[in-house]
View 1 (cartoon, rainbow, N blue to C red):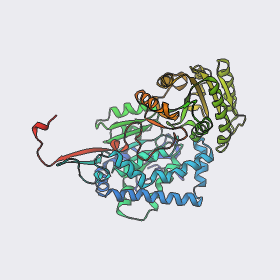
View 2: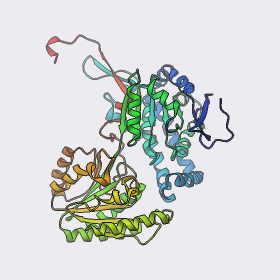
View 3: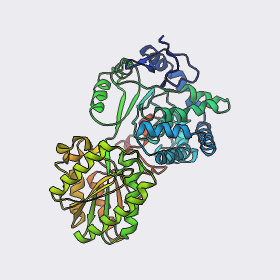
Length: 492
C-alpha cells in the first residue's frame, strides 16, 4: 500500500480501509487501487439490500441533515477558505463561488428531492421501498440498478451533487469520481455524513458511498469500466473523454447501462416587442453566472425583429453586463485579454458589430450580426477561443422571424465556433405572449430539453429531468408483480 504524507487529494472512504495508489504518478494525489474498487463492488449486494430496506423518509432525512449542517457552516463563515480554494481551481469569481455554495442546501433539501422522486418514479417515492399498486392486481417496485459509477464534470459542484444524491436515495452503492477542479468542494459536502448523529440510515448511506479521483488513463478506472460488475455508468462531459469511456464500457461483460449528460449548450431568444431593459438584465445574469460554462448557459442568442432594435438591445445588454459582471469580478489575465482584443478586431473585419468592456476584471464581449453568424472563422484565427474557452462572450444574430431563429438553433452543432456540442439543451425566452406558443412548439420539434424564462436558465426546478431523462429511471429498474391472472383478451 502506497503511503504519502498529507496528500492534497485522497479518497473519502467513511471509515473503510482500502488500498490507495498515487494517481497519475503524483504522490500528493491518491486514488483507489483496482483491488480496492473490486472490494467495494463486491460489497454491493449487501449494501444495497440494507439501504433499500430503509423507508424512503429515513433516507431523505439523512440528506436533509446534510443540508442543515451545510447551511450552518455557510452562515458561520467556516466555508470561506473553501470558497477561495475553489475559485482558484475552477477559475470562477470568488463571488460566484459564494453563490454556488449557497445553492447546496436547496439541492440537498429533502422536500425538493421527494418532489423529484414523486414526479419521476411510477408509483411515487414509496415504490423505492415497497410494492405499490398501479392497477387492481398489478404492482411496481423500483430497485437499485447499481453499483453505480458517476464520472462528473468540473464546471460546478451542483451537477455533481444531484446524480450522486439521487443514486444514494434510490438505494445504490455509488462510486463518485469528481473532477480535480471541484474535488475539494464535493468532498466537503459529503464529509457532512460523518457529522450526522449515528443511526441505521446514516450508516447505510455512508456504506453506500465512495469518492475517489482517478487520473486520465488510470488502470483502476479502466478496471471498473471494462471488467467489474457495475450496473450503471453516468458520464458528464464531452469528447474525446466521452468516446474513450464509452468504448471501455462497451467491452464490460456485465453490460452496464451507460448514460451521458452533455455536451450541450444554451441559447437566448429575445423578441423586439418585450421589455428590452428587463431582457438585457436577464441575459447579463445568465451570461455572468458560471461564465457560460454550464450546459444550460447561453452561448448564442437571436434577436427576432428589426436591426435597429437589435442594436438598441445590444447597447442595453452591454450596460447591464458592466454592472452585473462587476458583481462577479475575475482575475486579470493579460494574455487572455490580448487574444480577446485580437478576436474583437477580427470579428469587425468580417462585418460583426462589437461592443466590449473596458474593465479587465469584467472582460465581456457582445457581437451583433445580421441573419448569419460572424464567428465562423473565429476558431481558425483564435483556437483558444473555442466554445469552452469563451467566457462572457455572446453573439446576437438579428433574424426576421421565429422560423429563422430555430433554423440557427438546429444548425448550431455544425457551426465551426460551437464544435463539440450535441445540440442546444436550454433555451431562455424573452418573447411576447402572442409568439410564445408557436415558438415553444417549434423548439419542441427542434429537440431542445429545457425551455425557460431568460434570466433563469441556470436554475434547476425540483421536478426537472436531466437531458430529457428522469434521474430516478437511470438508477433503478422496475420489478413488476401481478397477483392475479390476466385475461387473454386483454393482451396487446
